[in-house]
Amino acid sequence: MNSTLLKSMLVSAILVAAAIHAEEGPNVAMPPGPPSNETIAAYVDELIDSLAARDELSGTILIARDGQPIYKRAVGEACKWYHVPNKIDTKFCLGSMNKMFTSVAIAQLVEQGKLSYDDKVGKHLPDYPNQDVREKVTLHQLLTHTSGMGMYWEELFTNPEWPYIETVQDYDNLANKNPLLFEPGEQFQYSNCGPLVVGLIIEKVSGMTYDDYIRTYVTGPAGMTNTDCYNIKDPVENIAIGYTKMTFEGTWLEEPIANIYLNPAKGGPAGGGYSTVEDLLSFDIALRSGKILSKEYFDIITTGKIERDETRRYGYFFEDKTVNGERVVGHGGGAAGINANLAMFVESGWTVALMSNYDMGIMFLRGKIEELLTQK
Image 1: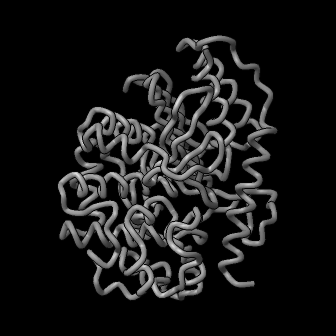
Image 2: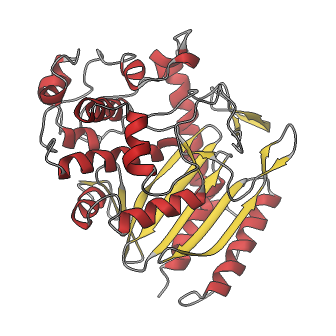
Image 3: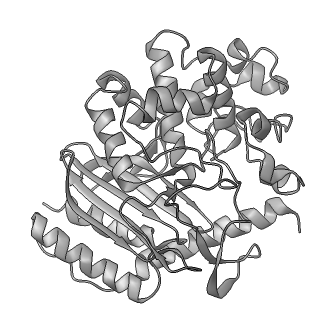
């Protein structure tokens, strides 16, 4: 069985298990009516205690309103080998949440007049090796997963040098000659190759490496001092090791194993960086206050452009959904031993940042917290 199928089976099995778990989690009575800080804390504590007792949650939880935290908690272990507990400032893998930083970077460059969402790839990358991508695909399509580009798992995990693939160009070289899966704009299909092209455009237009640009113009101004695309081959202080109960074949293990051989060593424009729940709150504050992006462009990137179902839409690397009548924007991340989410409640000002080094405990918790905070 090739690695693409194995990786797809793993991710699919985790998502299916997470969906089932979201429906079959612990039965904790939700308090009625609009929540107070006290009822939020009591309810979330009971949820966390129940999930942790079942060994289904390890991570950090932060809830804030109008930028002010009203609830913080850490549970579980960052390293099971040495029984190191998670702390609020523990760094967890973001999974696909890096895509939000990539979206902000592009929006900044659009706002400065250096590119347009309608630009085709070839305008900025005239030597890009895939002719169809170069001549047909627009930045809008890359940012909405409608480009026709796919994944690069097989090329990555069959490459004997995969632990040493680090730059955006290195990653893009894995699959940049693969044919498009469909004509650009025809449909939505989640892609991790598309964000790599976006990262190359950021590098070309800005004259900086992707990592340097994000540090200088996104995470740096936002005050996100514990966020970066760390290379986990090198020592990183206060970082959580991911743990998964899934095998590549999609079967369950009795005990969790470390995920250090199941994910790339370094992240980039598509995902794989690290952050903390406090840094994610800082990101939200910087976005909503206009510190790193104008209100106009914040609205542009977070407003859904592709309908997913009756309550969910996809914007420019931001999810846009409706929960009990309120818009909630942000993004999640998930893979083996990785589960995280940032939810920004547009009207009420709530922020919910959840990070975990387990497969799926956050999924159930996120749904319950979002339901609670949007009760009328």
